[in-house]
Image (cartoon, rainbow, N blue to C red; front, side, top):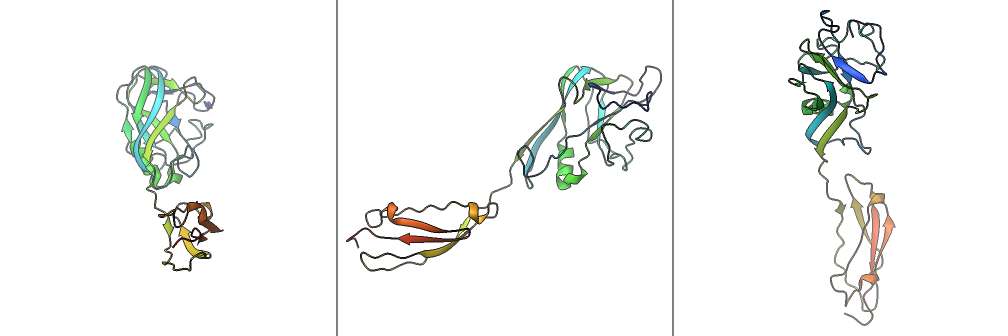
Length: 239
């Protein structure tokens, strides 16, 4: 907020983007928005290798106005930063913020504003550590007000994605077995593996293609981790 350069607005319930505030001053007001830890393996995070389909930033507008430009931030910032601590606000010079806007909102009406920010998410996906949010810069003197993270309707980021493709698990072959009537195969070793799940977490099951000869109950699995065993015992007097 150029007119109050030392004011900390981190607890403000509303944010403003304007190129003339107060009216007739030709002084800028900018806003910063960030959603942290977007990418990772935890719940509510976007997993590595996911295919991003859409990303929408939603802002609850309380005062309509001119279009706003969203530029990805390059430099770090804190919610407590002021116009002065950012040394004259944020410059879209490729050092503080990306020079070209990722998206322009167009004229803004009162109510829920949905902004397509897929390009920003795709850029951050390739380098999650580069996610420092956006600076919203004004394009005219008719300013826009919207609820902050301290306000009634907080900014929201909606992301739709396809999870990375799942590689099927692997299991080694067991050679054909020949045994005497009323005997057992003994433990037959085989190996299991999976690209996404640890071997210890893999669940193995077995079923018989001829339950008269070998009932399912006579198939016994053993072992742990990648090294497993199968013992097959035919029904008595069957061959």
